Amino acid sequence: MVKNYKISEPFFEYGPKCYMYGDTLLEMAKGLDKLAEKYDVDVILDIPDTEIYNVAKNVKRVHVYSQHMDSIPVGRGMGRTLPEAVKAAGAVGVMLHHAERKLTLEEIEKAIKRADELGLATMVCADSIEEVKAIAKLGPNILVAEPTELIGTGKPADKEYVDEVIRVIREINPDIKPFPSAGITKGQDCYNIIKAGASASGCSSAIAKAENPLALAEEMISAVRRAYDETRK
Picture 1 (cartoon, rainbow, N blue to C red):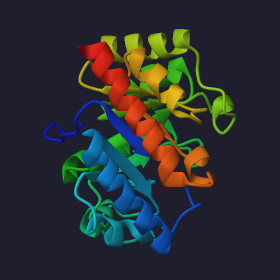
Picture 2: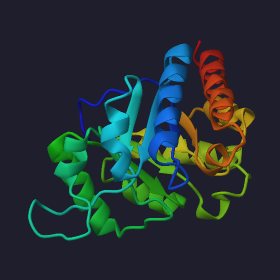
Picture 3: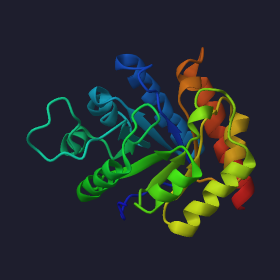
C-alpha cells in the first residue's frame, strides 16, 4: 500500500475498458474532471496505456490509472507493461486482477510490491469473499469487490454482500478503501452502494455504451455525493 496516496472519499471510478480511445476518451476525461470539481468527488479513470500520457496532462482532479501492470523490472519483457513506464506516462495508480485480466495471487502480490516501490496506488479486484480476504492481506490501497457473474449484467450486488465485503476488509486492514461494485447501471445503484458504507462506486460498460456517457456519469457522481453527505453527516 502506498502510504502517501491521497484520494478523498467518496470517490468514483470509470473504467472504459477498450470502448473509448483517442479524442473521444480525452473529451470524456475532461468532462469527468469538470464533474469532479462540480461535485467535489475525486474520479479514478483507468485507461489503456496508450492513452495515459495525453489524458494525464489534461486533467487535474481525475486520478489516471493504468488498466494493468506487470511486476517486471526494467529490461527484458517484450509486450508486457513496465511499472516505471506507467508512472513516467503520468499514471498515479494501477488496476490489477480485473475479471478480464486475471492474475495469480502470487503475481498480484509481486505487482503490489512493485507499485509500492514506485509510489503507484493499487486498486485490486476480487470476485468472491474468499478472494477479498486473500487480497486484503496483501495491502492494496483500494479493493474492488466484483462478483464476476454480475459484471455487465445490470444487477448490482445486494446489501448483504456489500456489508460482508466492508466488514471483512475493515477487519483485515482498515486502511484499505472498500469498493463493492459490479452491475452498476444508474445513479440509484451508486447511491445504494455509498449508503451501505462503501468508500466509492463506479461503472464501466453502462457509461461506455450509453447514448450520452457524460450525462450518465454525472447522474452517478451526483448520486455518490448525495449519498455520502446523507450518510456521513
